Image 1 (tube, rainbow, N blue to C red):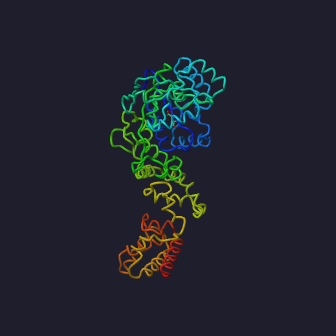
Image 2: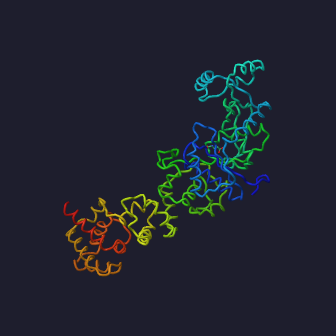
Image 3: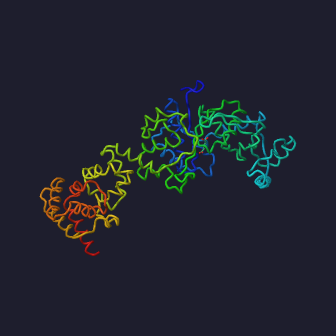
Length: 481
Ligand code: GLU
């Protein structure tokens, strides 16, 4: 689609003051999907003019986070810190056209103003003191080398713009003070830099978080003063935690890299993030990258805050995991398995690990689940789940049942699923008890838990020696109880 005969061009413009968090990533996803849907461009701009807070490490974290999600950007990355003269030139243009002026107010004066404003209006509002300084006064202040900043002149009236999500919005200019566009060190403020860059890079749609909604009228005023076409805006809803409070560290993982290390698949994360405030208009939830690109539009973005539902994310991740082949899953799981020294993963064959993956695959919500729940493939249980013990390690002759099971398994010539199953069922018959009276206690002995994949297959995979040892351990444990 063309926007006023221009090719769609959007940008993601993070400030590198922290890791790529869920909110920023969602904004990136929306921009990327929109660009790809329209065969347009997705630019990446690093807003690093706040030198004290910007950090190179965070720039790398943003690249890594986008890369992990599969959000490729077009053209070279734009660093605002490398474009300062561009902003300064346009600032000068605004001064020359009478739309901006130097302000020499001292910190003390501004602090006093802030204090009285806070009482009257609740927030700082510049009183236009320097707007009409006489030429003489200005020269005098310049001679004294008084530090100066540049403020934009906001005249009375209304500022109107169209938002793809919120419709037409009108702001009263009386609510907007003469805001700063250039600091005393000649560094532009966010408002000036963002408008200059969006114009210079021919951005057609500004898609960003709702928290910027109140910044937009100021930016529209800048566009108008510079005689530039105002881009389309789409302010996307806030993301709240499941307690309906703004998503923050309190809710647990919030940076994209946290989700990566917790074992979420990037494809699932991309799918999940794209549904935070957008839906394809039907009830479909699992949409791969291609389907997301095909379906994405700004019309179906919701005005209301989106809820970050971790249970849904885990469910979605499990859907994606179940689609991954065992070979690929093996590659993905290996780094997680290697972090667990006690697993001694090098002692196990690729075939063994792949079999264990095959057995647990359908139960995994995250990759770390495998390490957590499947530990018994690599390590004897060092404790037995209390609930499981209460439920199944009870009744008559428990120790004998375990000892008999162990002997039966130890004596098996052919240690395969079928022969194992037959022998255990025969033993149950022989003891005149239900097979469950053997199966459940064995499972706890082997895994420490009440739930596992099919027990006979598991016994076969773990092998005779491991099973005999673990049944012995369980008997020892029960004798001591
Ligand atoms: N740098 C701003 C932020 O990180 C985004 C600016 C914008 O999208 O206009 O919130």
